[in-house]
Image 1 (spheres, rainbow, N blue to C red):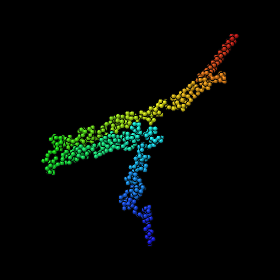
Image 2: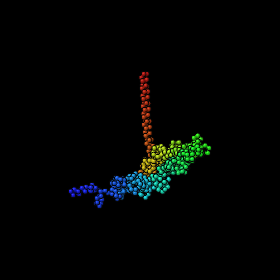
Image 3: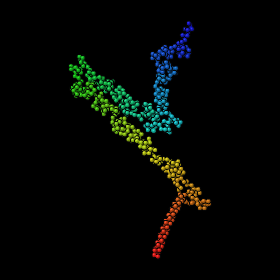
Length: 494
């Protein structure tokens, strides 16, 4: 029986081998954080978190090094966002969207700090390497502009702010502007974008939320309306503004008629229905519409923000359908962005070579974007590889000559006897040979002339000989005929 009891006591230990700490003592309910509650109960009750679901409280994972916590927020790094999947969570990653970098370095996020020529200057800042991005065309790489403070980069995307869109023209680019279409605000504030957080009556309630924006004593019209206190002077339960026995209602325009009657009769307008005539309320921009009813209370030219926001006209100077505030080329109806060629100049590429005409020195030659040595439409080819382009080479297929010389292309100007004349045809008896003292070109011409003369002479001689033979034959035939005739005549006479 005692052996069976001992075996039964060992079973829990066998089932909880992982509960044995390094010192070998048995602990069926581990409590890694020492708060007197077992780890399992900590996690179950929410006293401790277990974001990685390894059944160990997060604080213990961090404490024993099982998990990292680079930002010291008590949450293991493996449970936090890592947008670029580089193993460093976004909170600790200086370049959370660049898997190759964890800090901007010299070139900024998204641009490697490579130094291809090993001169100690990153390629992005090295003019000897491929030009780094320079969106503002000031001759300084964007990364250097940002690093030196010459350019701002409010959203840390490596692109200077001056090269990014600022729809409302308030000096803050859209990605960093809480109200990108409201030039007067960079954050929504209490009233939201497009509506100023003005408090006309100084009662601590902005006009957009104040039912009586010009009455510092009321934030809601109440029974008597704005500008009229809801008083009951005689305590009869009827407010003064409704009690005939009390003083007459307010007359803000001093026309001798209570405001309520002016509004009821249509003598005065009350666009916001606050019981207070419009002529007695604030119209900051003087456009005839009081602030509570004016979508742009400080812009005398607009009642609503429109596309461009208050303070910015929705003008479309070039009538291209895009207002000037959003048009990168407000005077060019064909473009809304400068593109490569700038406003007013088409980015057309007539020859389809990938270089727009404005930057193409040969806009009609798809094989060239600069005239080069031969000009547009003529290739700068060097067929014979002699270093002289064909268009300037009178012997484009003779690598030894650029001009025909005396002997012509393909024939060297050799002067074997050093007499200053190219070799000609051997003849005479001066030593073994005598070179004719005439240029080889003249000799060739003479030979050709002689050959032609001989051929012509031969042909003419043959022709003349044939003609003479024919004439002789004809004469002989005539003589024979005459002789025959004479003989016949004599025989007839006899």
